[in-house]
Image 1 (spheres, rainbow, N blue to C red):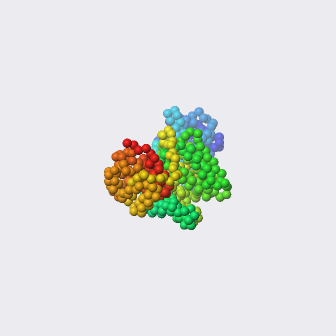
Image 2: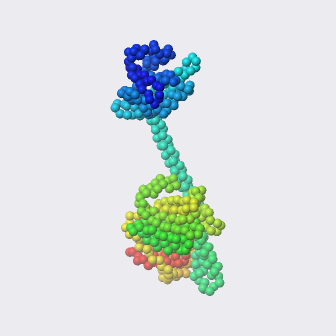
Image 3: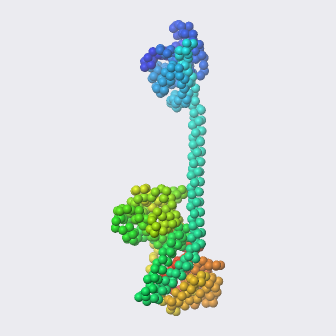
Amino acid sequence: MPRALLPVSNPDQLAYRLLLDSDWAEAGGLAQAPAELRVLLTTLFDSPEPMWLAWGAQDKHFFFNDAYLPLLGGKLHGAMGRGLQEVWSDVWSDVSEAIDDAFAGRHRSFRNLPLQMDRDGSLKETYWTFSYSPLRLLTGEVAGIFCVVSEQTEQVQQKNLHTRQVEAITEQARDAHLELVRAREQLRQAQKLETMGQLTGGVAHDFNNLLQVIGGSVDMLQHTLPPEAPQLRYVTAIGSAADRAGKLTSHLLAFSRRQSLTPEVFDIRESIRALSDIVGTVLGARIGFEVSLPETPLYVLLDRNQLDTSLINIAVNARDAIVGEGQVSISIERVDTIPSVRQAAPMLGNYVAVTVRDTGQGIAPEVLSRIFEPFFTTKGIGAGTGLGLSQVFGFVKQSEGEVDVQSSVGTGTTFTLYLPLTQAGSATAPVAPSHRIANGTGLSVLVVEDNVDVAAFATGALAELGFNVVLARNAAEAWAELQRGAGRFQVVFSDVVMPGVNGLQLARRIRDTYPGLPVILTSGYSELLASDPNHGFTLLRKPYSLKQLASALAQATQQPRAG
């Protein structure tokens, strides 16, 4: 049986000889070795486990049993005169230090040391555990060291596999947790919107009815008082206050996504180009402003006025965030993905991204998460209502889009509005508004209104314009009037929110039964209209002015009647 003996005198110039039992006899055999070494060598050579023995603190001799030879990777054969440092080149730095520690009387071990081994003709990574133990004489002197080696490749591979499985499970759990956090955040946001919607929707209808009476009365006074009347300045002040109150209600409804939208198809490039002069005026001379638009038309189906209001609101915030000189830019591009925003999952589709950048002071992280909340503002008292960005958020979400905000304190802020594109190939031709006060002489209007004060204003205003007015308090009374003679009326002017049959249901019934009779709907708030913007009827939002009422009536009565 072959034995390996490596005499060691200089670790850098180690040589070895392969010795058979007969070689030992020629060299004096084990009988020439110390008794302690003979016992150890017998244990070493008879062990089935990979082991080696180093003997002699000064002139170290290394003995390897047969089970250890494969660990040398074939380097032992044909390498006469080469050092042990080269034989153990992969791990020499660690092994030499461990050997010195063991001869110094300290136990050392290596767990799962990686070694490249020749397995089936190819090098593969294997793992081994080495345990070094000093061998002491009765005098306490360390005469040698024993190293017991065991392969741990299978155990390490199983552990690594288990670790990867655990990591995979952990990753899945992390993803599930993030999804849960995202769902909770979306639920919280939805509940906040719903609560705000219930709050604003519950008061908006009655509040706008009150504003309608106030604003309408102002219009009637301005229409009837002579231009030199001293009372006009008070009337104008009341009208301005009513207008501001109406805008507050409108912004609240926009945030809660209950605003009645009037969508139309238009090229968003042209809309932003037309708006750029107004935005430039809002920003002022101290702030540079530029617009970057693509050459290809991008058609959207949106409420153009609400889009303009959103961009102006963002521009106002950019202006207020810039101290001294600065820069604001608006750019648009077509995108096919909305990224993850506020924990929501990304959305694929055809969208246009409208980006507004400024070089202002930026928004602190603790403020950024609250900027869309109604009435939240960092501006001074009287400098802002805290509803501008709420309108932006509500309009974009109600339009089935998304709004993202990125900001860095001291650098600036970027708002990106993701809005859906439409498949329509051309813009809807805008209807030119009529600015004249309609003359209703000889024309009859069926007014359907359940609120006493609003009904009084509407009938009085229409009578002032020369219309013949018939008032119905609800849909049932209105239908009875139509059955008595629908030909008497040139237009029906109906509120939407009424007890029993609502105004939208009444309008559809009139369209089906009397298709040539135009219907104008009016409402300060209606979830029915907010959820069905494509109802097809002319909508006059409360509070409306006398001019707006006259314009809507003029357009309706000038259309040719069918049948």
